[in-house]
Image (cartoon, rainbow, N blue to C red; front, side, top):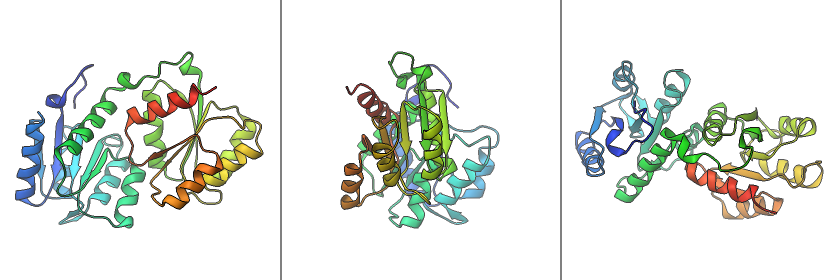
Length: 269
């Protein structure tokens, strides 16, 4: 795994999980063109998990449908193993079904690329990979950033872990995590927060209801609220905007994008 203070695409180690030899060649050729030369190919989940035992790569790229499972199940298996919890994961697939893609978005993938994909999309995904591997590049240039207190609200443990990682890489160490809006309200009653990062879809009290509570009933009505969501319905997104969120970010997201949104929210008068 690359650990240097400054790395490029050429320093990345990649594990590619793809049952089709033809697709393997196509993807590896694209990676080589961008400068990624260290790619190990696996045909299925079992060989991939076994192959990375000795050396965890910087990035795993997978197809969705594998002989012994799905890319979603592979990503979930990685998140459950302490050694690979933070292994960056990218999906390349023409799959569009919600039941396959939503768990991946919650697990914090680097990118979901279609088949066929554009070279520019792959380059963008690799740049996001570097963002995660070089956290100092996304440090917030904000006074007393280490004293900032952030509330992360998401019913997915893996999603909360992913968001915490991004915040920590930005220099924000004081992060409180809760699983739903009801727990968030209790925390808001007890603590002052500089930023709230919330999901939309949650049990009991969702992100929109939480935002309305903060804006209408809490003692910190002006706190910036960033909603990180895979929601794509334009009507519902408009309703969320009207509830008072400061910004909305799609899942999967880029660390640099989160950094820019946070900076804009913190610098608002």
